[in-house]
Image (cartoon, rainbow, N blue to C red; front, side, top):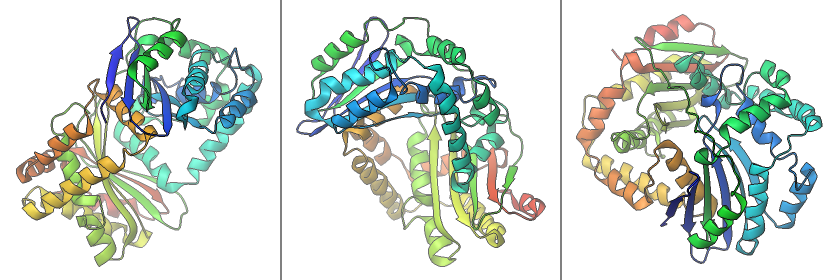
Length: 423
């Protein structure tokens, strides 16, 4: 799981992850832009642009030509947009690497953004929004972002609002792309049985004329909170989905390993505290998970679950009690060791494929600019002590960092608000 990173003279970064003997190769091109880089009027533009890049290039003028050529290679391909990055990728048999690289480079560098396809794609994305609206387990995360960050880039949905989708013009895409799709914001990642020199040769060949404009930063995320906050998106559902979240740490923070272990203890695995309590003992839910999200300048610690509306208050009290307990009672050596092993085991199992390896290093490069091998992350996890976990719990589990987002047919929010406190 070694890697090689090279920064070209134009600022473009190239990461090669050689996996000897692997039959597949993954080509991933990342641009450091996403919804957190957008103004309110631009919200949804990064994601919409990602769709439009597949609608034709100067060499492949129709979307069908791109799709057929990739299918002829037996490739898996797609793109994705998040808060701080947009990615374009294709994965296929190793023998197809040169052609695979050329196609993804073409998509990224030479999209024509045809006006006729723009009109069609509006309908596609509007249907995508409707699809997410019908998925409360996903919708609740949008509600959470709005609750924690309000009317700021970090608080707005990645996909954008319907009114923006309906009003974007081709020129909006051209202007936005020219500002962000530049060498200094571009990262090429290749994972597979290829050597660094081959990857560099292909990159220099196809990315030779990528614009070298100045790198545009995103606005800083501002976190302002003094007391617990609650936001309910009322919707008739058979199950009420909720996410309890706390403001936590950015990706460069040295406390991240302890935060990871804290999440493991609370809600990772079938022997975690919350799974044991809520599912095995109470029979209150099918799923309950704890985790964390880390970005360049902010982060969150989250606990998510889905319960019957009649059990919201009961479950909420348990979540708060279990969080509070970790601020007062040290984790046992046995539980600490189990949590570490669970995390480390899943870390390595999650890196068995070329696509997972490419995304693993891409995420690190965007969020920290410093790449760590899995073995290094393992060492950091193993160093975490019970006292480290308690210190992080005390710092994170506070009323002034506490948020609760709910999607469901909740009859009375006032009774929920009353118990939403760690005091």
